[in-house]
Length: 189
Figure 1: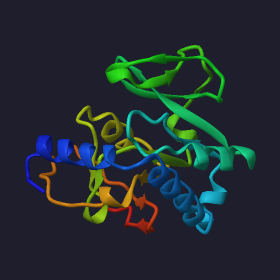
Figure 2: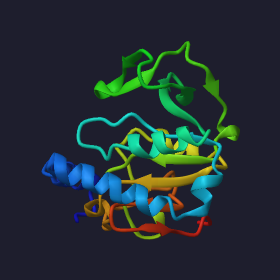
Figure 3: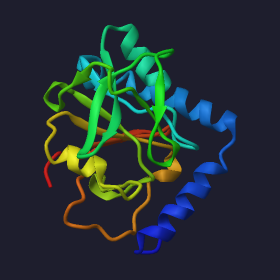
């Protein structure tokens, strides 16, 4: 992969776009199977997930599983000063924000960062030691600089790559889940 992030992002989006619906659903089911073997997954009481956009890994099966076991699932909402997390359930109204991403309404019940035990995090790539390549807005980097909850990136195995230049503000993931494995990294920088 090139060191410049823009071509890397474009390449990874295209690779992700090329996956068939069958490949996606199979990967999501296999990832859930791997996650079910991880004890920390079952201990999380408040989980920040996301509403998938375009060809992102769809974490719905992960969220539904934990919701059925009593966990509270919250979703990001873009605000003037970053991301805030709000309760949302399938069927609740949504609105569209930057880039056509769906988000809960502002009136949805909010949750503080300190309440979140686990972040299921969207991304374009996960590199060595949990270096995350996001979409360029820095939203999750700002959240992770404050949050204490476990930072789990989710994606397809093709998103586990290296080679872009990191920046001082980049915050690391503590784990990466794909259809092939659950990889845990040290939470320390």
